[in-house]
Image (cartoon, rainbow, N blue to C red; front, top):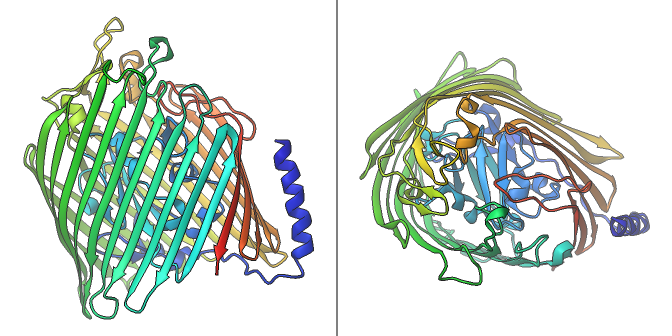
Length: 611
């Protein structure tokens, strides 16, 4: 860490010298009360929403000391990111103790679920440079988004424009890390364009943990003066050593994986005084190659290609009775796999919800339902109800109840190999969830506390009948009760006329899944029982900002760990210099499976903005 201390000292000396010379703008703390949460139908300001929602703003991202979305989401209590590798190579997404197949990821409202497996959810995660904010909806959201939002949903909202700008970023650090990216914004007479290209490479922090990842993103708005049409196109490729990602060290395999994820979508919006209609078409594709022996492709090889082609239309109508949201989402899924076979599925979901307001608009009641048809699992319905009451101008109490549902992935149904076996006779997972909460939102303080309960049936886990059996088979296990509590507090204040932020979060989760025999289960027994996070973002000088992030985790397996991250950013006119230090005190821990996370490491960055 001596290099960090030396460079930090240099930053401070430079900042003192430049403090009187430059007129750099003070970083503005985003006002959550002004953020509009963009569900697919009824859009509401954050403070008016009657659910537990965390917002990660553009300022939060800048002060996060994170390199990827996986790193960033770990700083939210109640969100469990279990990484098997670094640089965004692979990470599983969990909310409130749900499984990695039970959380839906969206990009600007476009559903990024994968019919093969939830392991690919984070393959679609965007580079931080193009993200405006991230909306984290906790608890069942099936009536709003559909069946994959079993325990929650995360909507990544991309930036709308970057004016006319070009910025280049170069980072280098421990384990041979070398990252580079270029981000371009173009504002033309009748169109707007944002383009990003990035590369992330590393030699790896342990045997067979190297990676070579590429990111490409394009967002364009055409025909701005008449009927704007928005296009999003992405392509992400990841090539990485997958040592012990799926097998223990004792098995002696040298695993390797390559994934490609792409999306193209077109969206437009028709608006009148009372009616808003937003149609969209999209095509999402994921490709996955896995080798059990990296240097011997013929030993064991899995290759899967999944395509999802969809069309949807969402609408909101405002009347004297309130706001009515309705919509339809149709999609077709195709899978080609040497292990899972050739499969296809047609899905249609109808959405209907209405927001009533009473008592001088202090009381809001929003009932809703989603009705889905699956060609292989027939009809299902997910009703739900949200209720909120404004106790005072900035203080709101809320509660919600709802049913949620998830059909098995093709891996759950048909996979065979590597000690796991699918089960074509699986039943869909079901749950009924309830939540109560209260939140306070003001420019200086944001605070919320919520308690929740979820009663689940037919949860899918990979289990074996006894410890002598080597194969774990996908099985609908018994009823599981999950309950918990979450607390979030953020305090914004000024010191020397600079904005400072101190934020803490705590999540407690308890379920009775340990009543199952833990030696007989593969996936369900590693949830976060206690999760504490804190971020202290300070600015004492005009050109320098420091961020310290602390994370404590206690899992149901008994493992506990403390991880400290930090960053220093100095801005000198068009140049931005940064240091990001991860796992400063060298904690030894595992988030998922058999893969230890990296020891202490440092990443140095240089960003130049062309004018």
